[in-house]
Image 1 (tube, rainbow, N blue to C red):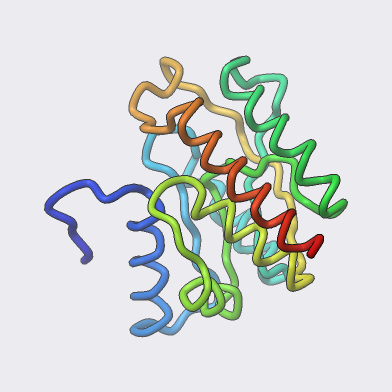
Image 2 (image 1 turned 90 degrees about the vertical axis):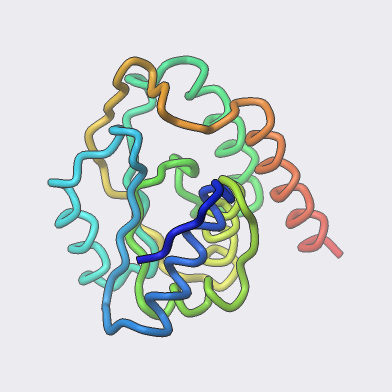
Length: 174
């Protein structure tokens, strides 16, 4: 078990978990899901089945019409911009319910940085850049009391994600 005495951010926790899995475990699929009650663990098999079909990254895609406006706005804006750069980009780029193949997990452990939610976005950018197969898997859309347990800051974290996107966009154009 990996424990941090002080919260270091979701991205740091995910990266440490992915690095640990790559270096210490045998697996075909790594599944991540947020702990804020927004994802139904009974849907894990849907995610792993997509990896079994050849996907390197599976995004559990929520129904945007069932999202609160404050959650939908940033996701829709970033999705719109990302699709201009990568037409095959997933719509729900901020879903924390994901399946990652062993090969992509190794690339993430080696190449991705970030301490907060932008780390997950960098995983999508890595997969898109390398032409990895990304499958969007429809999942239940759950918002419990507007997910007060989530630490996602709509302004700060959206800004971080947009900064990563624009930096990536600029690098791609050069």
